[in-house]
Length: 348
Image 1 (cartoon, rainbow, N blue to C red):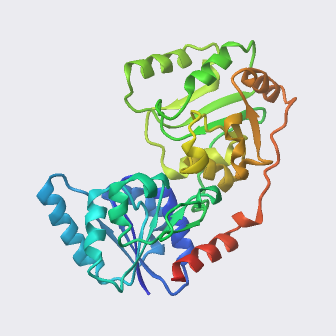
Image 2 (cartoon, helix red, strand yellow):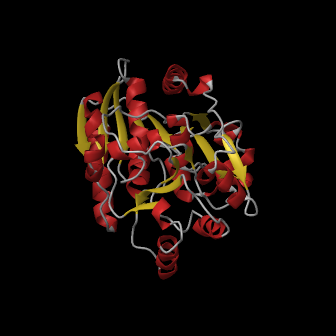
Image 3 (cartoon, helix red, strand yellow):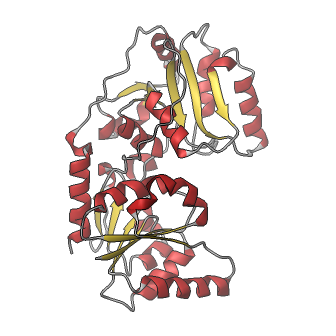
């Protein structure tokens, strides 16, 4: 079956490899359509695709329409189209609307926020062609839209590399993955907790993401971290971290700390990529109590609140509190994830 996996944005590359591996040695003959900026990131697994094509969204009403027609001409030769981000983009919206002229072409999408099914006009247009969506966790599979089918899969598989990073034997690494983002993450929570701690000897906080230009308040907050009495135990990056190095740091982590603000959408509609990185590397999570409703966190997480985080960090640092052993559920095995993914592709 001639199949295309499509990602026209510069995000969500982390979902591509798992899908390509699931389809390897199957009836799905896979091509990849991506934004040119993703090309360096797929270099380690480019051989999983028969062909790689580059597309990017243009600006302007008429150029967008022209781009949609151009993309349609390329996609109409396929039997199955899998949209790695099936939302928001006007190019994807317009192309899928035009694909209704080709009823034999099957389309499936990944939803990174399932709330869009209920509330987004653009998503309603996209759903005129896509009737089946993947979401990225089991607890996101609920929808009131009877004509829409949702299934979950976990993109928790990554290429193996020989990249290594140095870690001293006594160090305890608490890794905060993702770019510095003051809208989504509660950095003041950590900063205020550190101010209550007298000594830390072993913990290192690694902010595993590029430090982008931020607001004036954001820069001031970062300056406070850098002026902290524990500044030598806080690591920031002011450069893009290549995938190999990124995964190497995660493999050496002791805990992953999402450090998210308490947003109910994470309980119902979306995940943070840090969740799946923890499952992928079999690392315990350090998370606010607010997120204890997420069933995947059960048994794998040390929960904290604003009042006790400093105590928990001190106990972890002194090794009075051990990181929980990751409960490697059978549902997260490559075999089960592949079977579930392919079953959904093949089903009507």
